[in-house]
Image (cartoon, rainbow, N blue to C red; front, side, top):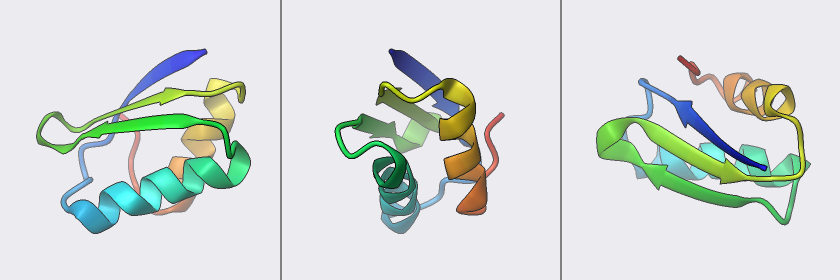
Length: 64
């Protein structure tokens, strides 16, 4: 399933990597695409949306 998340407090490459790593911890096969200028994270994953949101927020980021 493909999900799109708006993450407004993603400011740098480290933020991108932290979010990607958090998602990959719960689904190693997930495909994560980050569009930092537009605050957008697209994830193709078998995990439910709620689990991905929790992974991102536990890293300290806001999902709008």
